[in-house]
Each structure stands twice: as C-alpha cells, then as structure tokens.
Image (cartoon, rainbow, N blue to C red; front, side):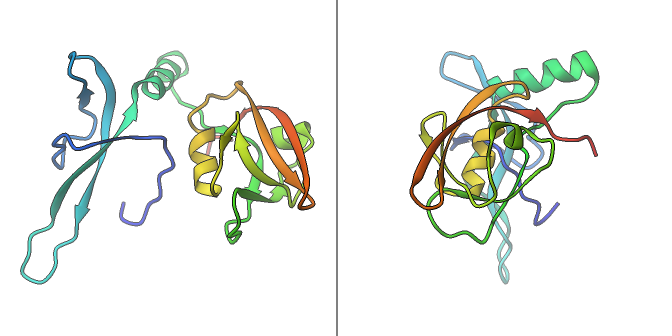
Length: 169
C-alpha cells in the first residue's frame, strides 16, 4: 500500500523488474538465484506523463528468503527478530537512541537502558534508527548479536543480546 514503510536489507539491482514481477528470482551471471524481486523505484505520473519504473529494483537476499521459507514450511508462519526497545525516532545524532526498553525483552535482559545510543551492531556502524532495524532484521530470532552503546554521552559498552521474536499480531 502507498506510504507503507519496509525495513529490509535489500539487494539493489538495475535488472528490469516490471510491475507484477515481484516474487520472481534475481539471478546472477552464473544462473544462481541470489534473491527474490520485491520492489521497484518508480516515478509518479506528472501532468500528461506516464508513471513507471526508473530502472532501479530491490530484491530480498537469498539468505533471508531461505530462513523465512524454512520457517513457513515448518510452522506455517515466519517470525521477525527484535531487540525489545522503542526507538527515539526524533534523535538526530549518529546511531539509534533508545527511548524505552520493553519489559521482559532481550534488551532489558542485556542491561540496555533508556537513553542509550546504539552505535554499532556486531562491529558495523549504525547511522540511524532505520539502519538499526534493517541490521537486526538481517538476523533470526535466537541469534546472538553484540550491540555497542554509548551511555550518558561518554561511556561505551558492549552488550551481547539474544534476539527474540516479535509478537504475532
């Protein structure tokens, strides 16, 4: 739907993906399936012009596809990994600021506190809250990650954290 936001670590491609081709394979030069086409960037129709693809597409990486399809086959549903925080989306500094720690969540168990700023996940820089969500969703529930957080502006802490599943809605 228009206006929906998706958080996924996608493969960007200039291979032709036409409307209706979502779900098709993205194949490399060796004929191997490396992803599943999921979205295209398009221009809206301006006065008297036709809307359409601008030659930029996105695919779900095959590692994510394998994890999700195996979960669907085994249990009939797929899970989303979460750390158990509400992020402060108004934060404009580097990293992702924790607004609230969810009671009983993985972040609480790891010792995370409200106001902590997550700057790295497994040693890779986190530029903002969107990048953090994308990085987390590249993993699976049950995976252990290490978050680097800055507390009180100057204290750098490494927090090992085991991802949980988002509640089913």
